[in-house]
Image 1 (cartoon, rainbow over the protein chains, first blue to last red):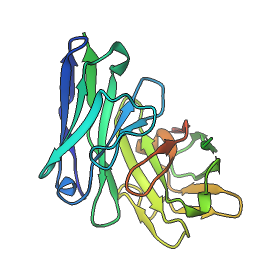
Image 2 (image 1 turned 90 degrees about the vertical axis):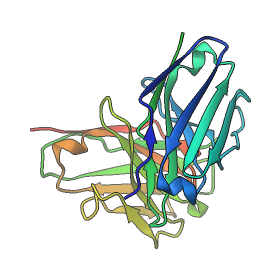
Image 3 (image 1 turned 60 degrees about the vertical axis):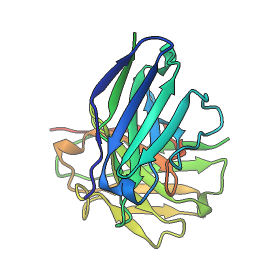
Image 4 (image 1 turned 30 degrees about the vertical axis):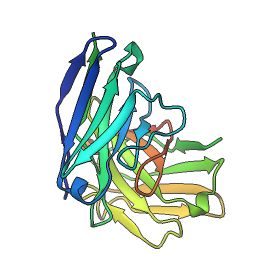
Length: 107
Length: 116
């Protein structure tokens, strides 16, 4: 089955920019999506179709990809962006896979 | 507005069964691909299973294949997960999720604890 690898944790100063990466074979074929999860809450979709943002998601969140790597960038990080972030894609078998998750700390 | 409300979680002994339900509203359930996703305590998200809008196509994570059949009742806008031969490692919050290529709506989850 497919795997998606993320850095376990990153930190960013308030107002600065942070990039989270996700690597895996399925990303070479299918678009990545990204979810934000705060403690005790269900995940929330923040990026889909590689670069699209759902309604209500601030434009400081952006997505990109190259080959088997997808990235989520937070430009001008805010305190409320402190959360766990998970990438996701589907594979050719119809299965889906989540990344290992990245904990973002805003300093 | 879109609502996904899971139910059926609880404490169950290893080897026993449990059925989860997800009541959907606020969107066209019968036109939507639906999933179950779980999260063990303190761990990451794990995709569990998917079912097509008409219920004909189903795919499963290797960890639950053959034990957790997914099904749906489009006449009652309800998604199910029948969990059999439960193991301690199945302990998790189980989320009902809508989406085909990405997961746009999530329920709040229901906790399943497998313990003797």
